[in-house]
Length: 121
Image (cartoon, rainbow, N blue to C red; front, side, top):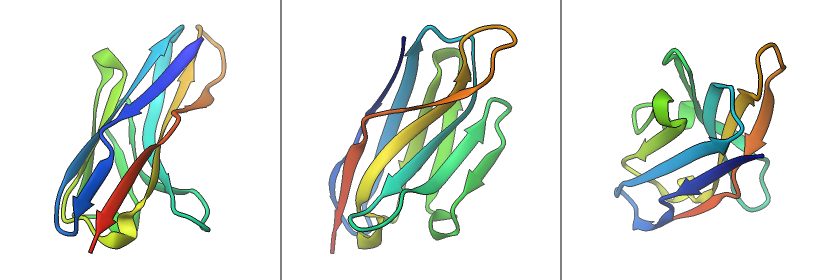
């Protein structure tokens, strides 16, 4: 079994900051990529940011310069520091972990349950 659990969402005023955390646990051999996605009402889920085990990062254009993704490989944990938040950042944020459960086995995606981020104007 693998569990992916997020925390840190909430309500914040525009211009404020929030920090999301996500930990993957259970029967894990290695975690390749960890990332954050978000889905606003009536919209498709979109990538916000991702980070590889080697530390390479990728950001959506809409969050570059405002959000920072980081990770602790020893704890299989990923963080998303969100600054200068805007109302359009309001969404459910989902953590994704692409991982393998044994030597030579393929990577699969595991998702958290989601955490609500609401930015008021």
